[in-house]
Image (cartoon, rainbow, N blue to C red; front, side, top):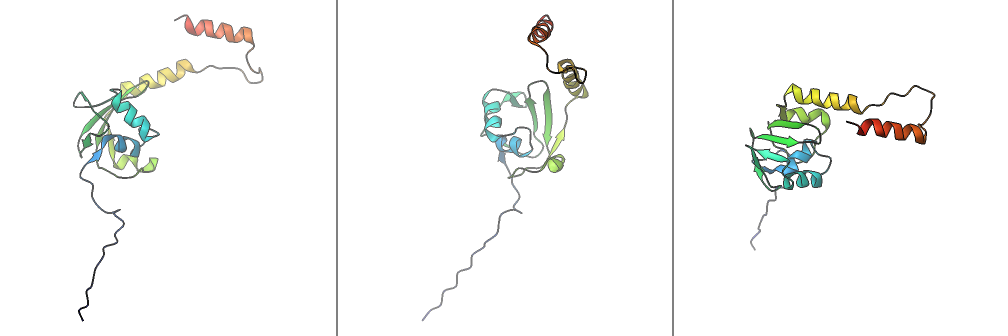
Amino acid sequence: MTLKVFLFNYSSGKNKKVDAIRIDKWLWAVRLFKTRTQASDACRGGKIKIDGQNVKPSRDIKDGDEIEVQLPVIRKKVKVKQLLKNRVSAKLVDNYLEDLTPVEEYEKLDMMKQLNHEKRDRGIGRPTKKDRRTITKLKNSN
């Protein structure tokens, strides 16, 4: 009688190094987009570029790639430090990407936030219909 021994390797796969990963998955994992679907749609819509060329969601990226992401107000430029499989917490994002976005872009974002902010004194309550029409007219007069 012959005894056969089978050895199985039940590793979880967490410590495996990733060589390449889809760009839509990486953008979602480093929290540039809330969902992977949004990241894929941005790739299809031409909002994601590598080396000045639009990329498809299935494009594999490597360490050192520089990615341009067109967000609603600013154009963000990031460099891939490290690849990852799963989404990480916001505190750990800096380990996986380097932000190369110029300071002027963030200043533009702050300016847009200030322009859209409306100051109302405390206790006045909600604007009336007449007040809302006046506010709308002032905002659209640009």
